[in-house]
Amino acid sequence: MTQERREIVIPSQLLGDIKENKAGRGTFVENGIIYSEILGILQKGSEYINVIPIKGRYDPLVKDLVIGIVEEPMSSSWLVDINAAYPALLHVNEVPWDVDFGETEKYLNYGDSIMARVLQVDQEKKLQVTLKDRNLYKLKGGYILNVEPQKVPRIIGRKGSMISLLKKYTKCRIFVGQNGRIWIDGDEDGVNKVINTIKRIENESLSFGLTNKIEELLKKDAKDVH
Amino acid sequence: MNSEIKLFEDGKRLDGRKPDELRNIKIEAGVLHRAEGSCYLEWGGNKIIAAVYGPREAIPRHTQNPLRAIVNAKYNMAAFSVEDRKRPGPDRRSREISKVISEALENVILLERYPRASIDVNIEVLDAEAGTRCAGLTAAAVALVDAGIPMKDIPVSCAAGKIEGQVVLDLGKNEDNFGSADLPIAISPRTGEILLLQMDGHLTFEEFEKAMELALKGCQIISDLQKKAIMEKYQSKTEGN
Image (cartoon, rainbow over all chains, first blue to last red):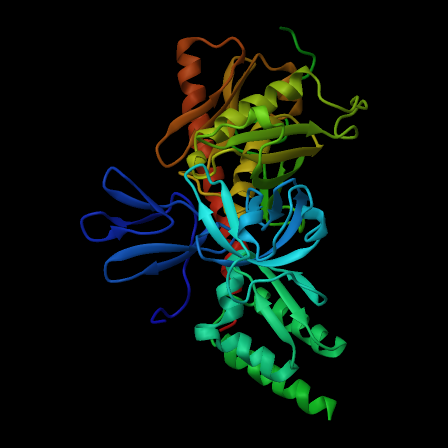
C-alpha cells in the first residue's frame, strides 16, 4: 500500500469529481460529485475511488465459502443462518446425500454447522447455499469463532499469509468462512492460542505490518513453551 | 402567558447561555458490544443511548417490503428519566416520536440495498431535560454510521423556540415548560433538506423564519460534533504504526 496511513471516511464525505475519477464501491454520485456512503477506508486508485467498509453485515456473494448453522429443517430443505441479513436455503438437491422427503432431520438438525458455498443471490436477496462441491461438508467437533465479517481479509492475510502462519505455529486446523465465522480444531492450547491471536488481529486490523508483528508474537510464544 | 420564573436576565438565559448558544454536547460512538452500532450522547441534561441492530429479516413477515428495507426506530423513556416516575412502556408521545424519527432516517439510508430487511434503531432516554427527540435522532444517526449502514448523509437535529417574546436556540427544561413555542427540526446537512419539522405553540412568520435560521445554524455545529465523534473512534485504530 502506497498511502502513508489509512484514511477513514464517513458517509456524505466529499471524495472527488466525476470528471477526474470513477465512482467505485462504497460511493455514490450526486450532481457530478462523488461522496462516500459508508464508514470505511478510502482507497484511491488511478481510476476508481473505493471505500472499503470497516463495519457492517456480511454481504453474500456467489461462490463465497461460508460456515452456516442450521436454523430449521423443513420437509425438503433446510434454512441455514450464514450471518447475512437473511437466512439461506439449502435444498435437498444440493446435498451429497440421498435424502427422502421429510427426513431432512436425519442428516442435518438444529444447530449443526456446515461448510457451504453460496450458490445463488437473487435480486430480492434470496440466498441459496450448496454442499455439493469438494471440501464442503458437515462440521464435526472443533470450535466456531465469530469475528467482524469485514475483517476476514485481514485474518486470511495477503495470499493466505496470515492464516498459514497461524496454522504453522499452532498446528491447528483452521477454516475461515467469508461470513466472519472461523472454525478451529486442534488441541486445547493450540485453539486458545488461535483465538487470542485472531482477536488481536481483529483489534489491530487497521495498522500496518501486522503479519510480521503476529509472527514475532507467535515465535515468542513458541519459545516460552519449551 | 404569565410565568413566575424570569427566563431572561441581562440578555442571558436561566442557565447563563446567550440566545443563540447551544447546551454542552458530548457524543461517543460505539459504546455497546452486542449492538451492530451504538452511540452515547449527552446534551445538556439529556443522556441518551442509541443502538442499531440489523439489517435483518423483517418480522412479522407482512411488514417486509420486497423492494427495500424498513426502518424501525423505537424511542423509549426510562422510568427514572423524569422527575416524577414515568409509567414505563410505549405511550402516545413516544409512539409519535418513534414514527417521526423512523421517517426522518428513512430518507437518508440507502434502503434499496437490503430488500425485505428491517433496520432496528433503539433510542433509550436515560435522563431527560427537554429536546430529547432532537438528541435521540442525533444519537441514532451516529449509531447508524457506526453500524456500517450505507447512508446518503448523517442526519442531525436541533430545536429553536420562543421565550418571553424572544426567539432562542435549543430550549432548556424551564424554557420548554414556560416558553411559548418550540420548533424542533432535523436536516440532512450536506444538502440542507429538511427531514423533520414540528412546531408546538405559535410563531409569527418573521419569528418562524428567525427560529429556522437559528436551528439550522445549531444543526451545522452539532453535525461537526457527530463527525468528530465517529472519526475519533476509528482514527485512533489507524495509528500506532
